[in-house]
Length: 395
Image (tube, rainbow, N blue to C red; front, side):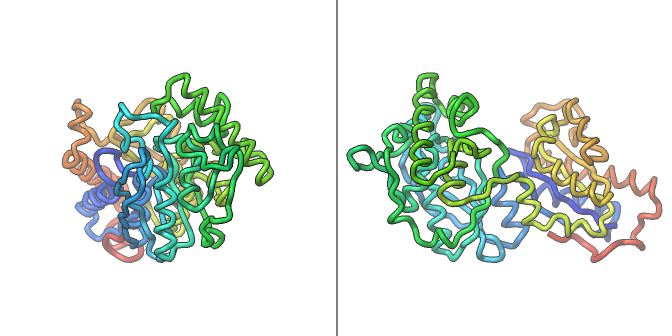
């Protein structure tokens, strides 16, 4: 029996690799020689670096960069096994958890550290980038990142406009003369699962600003700055940045990547599945195991399990989804290719207890074992003499 295990992390509990390992252990108690193919998974958000580095045999690199409050922070990114592709989660350098609640102010926070991570990766020989947007504490339209990369944004007097969302109001011109020359050799693939425009009622400031500490008055100022910046960009480069789906992602970083770095904004899970070679690994599989911490109505909207299910359905392979919690809305997942789904929690427990790593690992292993005992009972032909492919666990 060949089983492909492609499960997202259970956020705050167990990583994708840890969850996969426990599921494989449960399967092997029933089918000792099962061919378990482990594919660490993410959807472009938190955990993407770890998943892609694990899947490709890459490495994690940690560097000191400028944090969102312009103070030094230690940030990590991944270099894939090919040595040419860097994977960066912008939250590592400008994420909301890096800013204490009392200091959250998107008028002042900067994405400068994201640019420093890109420069470091370029110095390591990387020329392809996978960027995970999301979780930022910023609303500066990516000017901080671009400043780190050598771009200069000036006011009416020709002086530097400064940093943070408030600087957008002062920008009148853009100078790219000293931009990092290697950028022209780089390809940027952006994991972005929102289509918000840069400004306006559905833009970065109004939709995401409040969760970053912006008051109603700040939101208005930020939105005015984003609109003004869009005008400056249009005069400098042509085209309407407002019309780019996802321009407002991560406080406008989506716009910066798309316009200044010619980045391609695309589905996060689709990008991850392509990199790990998911479709190729499905060949010869009998069953696919996927899942995440919580299966609900949002799972079908670009989350990792739905992406896995669509590929498996294309090849006629049944899919079992495991989760810590399952809501009523998850029933719609059966129409998207998930054959059946199960909660790994057996009885009433507190959320804290259910998320305790040792408890979650045990529940994953136990649930997988019980499911495959059922499979063995109803499908006696799936025995150890009929295994497909190589035997054992493969990551």
